[in-house]
Length: 397
Image 1 (spheres, rainbow, N blue to C red):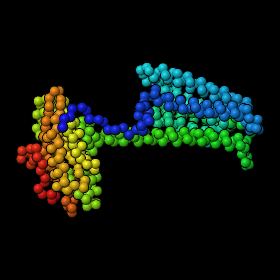
Image 2: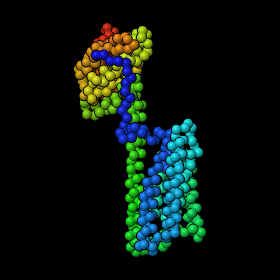
Image 3: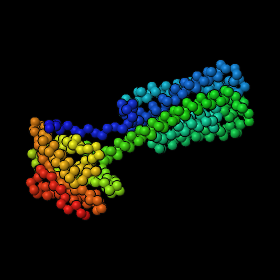
C-alpha cells in the first residue's frame, strides 16, 4: 500500500450545510455581525409600511386609528428604512477596511434599541408584538456581541421606553398615539385590532423561533466541533489520549454492566526514532499520519483507535475477547508492514509490535489496569524481536 504524507483531514464540520459557506456567525468579526442587527428589520419595516398604507386607505378604522399619528408612523418607518439603508452602505465600506470600528458597532446597537423604543411608544410598549420584537433583538445583541456593549444598548432602549412612559403618565405624551380611542373595553375587540395584532405577532414569533433555533443549532454544532477537537490528535486524526481514556472507561462500564467482552491493543512503531533521525521530523509526521489512516481503515465501526503517546497507539475493541484482539492486531500490523510512505523522494517503511489484554468475566479491572497489561504484553513483543503480537499471559488482576 502506497500513501503520501498529506495532512490528515480535520474533523467534519457539524454546521448546517446551508451555512458552511458563510461560516459560523458567532465567529464573525463585530463589523460583520452588525448586518445581522440592522438588516433583518428592513423586511419587517417594509411589511409595516404596507400595513400602515393599508390602514391609511381604510375608512373603517377611523374610530380607532389616529390618522395624524399614523402619518407620523409612516414617516417614522420611512426614516428607519433610510437609516438602515445608510448603515448598510457604511457597513459595506467599513467591512473592507482594517480596524475594530467600535464606534460604528456601538452606533448600530444603540440605534436598534432606540428605534425599537420609539416604535414601542407609537403603538404602546406593552403590546405583544413590541415585547416579542424587543426581547428577540435584545437576545440577538447579547448573543453576538460582548456583554458590556449589549448591556449599554439595552439600557439606552429601556431609558427610551421608561422615559416615554413617564412623560405619558405626566400627561405630556399620549399612550400609543396611533390609536385615537380605547380599542376595546370589556367588549369584543374590532377586527382591525385583532388582525393587525395577529399579523405582527405571527411574523415576529416565526422570526424569533427561526432565529433562536438557528442560534442554538450553531452553538451546538460549534460545541460538538470543539469537543471533537479536544478529543482528537491533530497529527493522526485519531483520538488523543484524553479521548481514548474517556472512551475506554465508558466501554469498561458498559462491558461490566452487561457482562460483555472487551479488549485493548497497545501498538508501537518499531525503531521509529530512526525515521526521525535519518529523514527528519516531517518524515516522521508523514509516517504517523499514514499509519493512522491504515489503522482506522482496518477496524470495525464499534472500535476506537487513538494516539496514546509518541508513536504508541491504543485500540479499544468492544465485544472482542483476547483471541479476537490478537487477530485484529495481526491484521493491523500486517497492513503497517505492507505500508510504503512516499516522502521527499524516499520510500519509508515501518513495522509495529503489539500487546493485547482483555477483561475477564467476574474480575473487574480499571482502564489503567487494562492498559498496563497490554503494555506489558507489548514489552514482551519488543523483547522477542519486534514486528509481532503478544497477549497478556495472566489476565487476572
